[in-house]
Image (tube, rainbow, N blue to C red):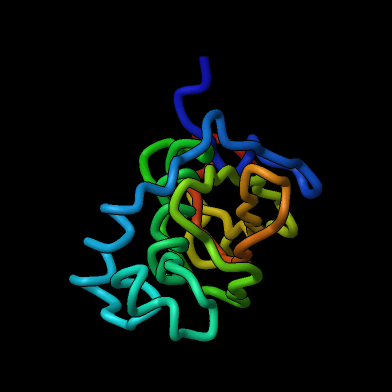
Length: 153
């Protein structure tokens, strides 16, 4: 059983898939919007009808948060990782109540840290898909991961 990924466990081109999907619940979608992104398209069917989407959709930040949840479950990091920045973030399609989201994480690049030899920097490209296999969100992020004790490249 995987107890957590280290920098040394990952290879460029490797693809990790979420072990489950997340269901987009209407009430949670609205609750998130009420607290964090109170725009009409996210608050009610009535308000959303006059939006550019014409229907209730999740906040992009809610989609990002659900992606982060799936990422944490998929890319279990040994002893924790540390975000080092986002290179790209795109909302590709609206996410709607009833959608089921899953992710694929591709290792795009990696290099050992010059200043902290016990860590390495990995670039991940994560794509979130809906139940129809359509990409709805993507992010390219850099993360510092712990190295296995005694590992060298």
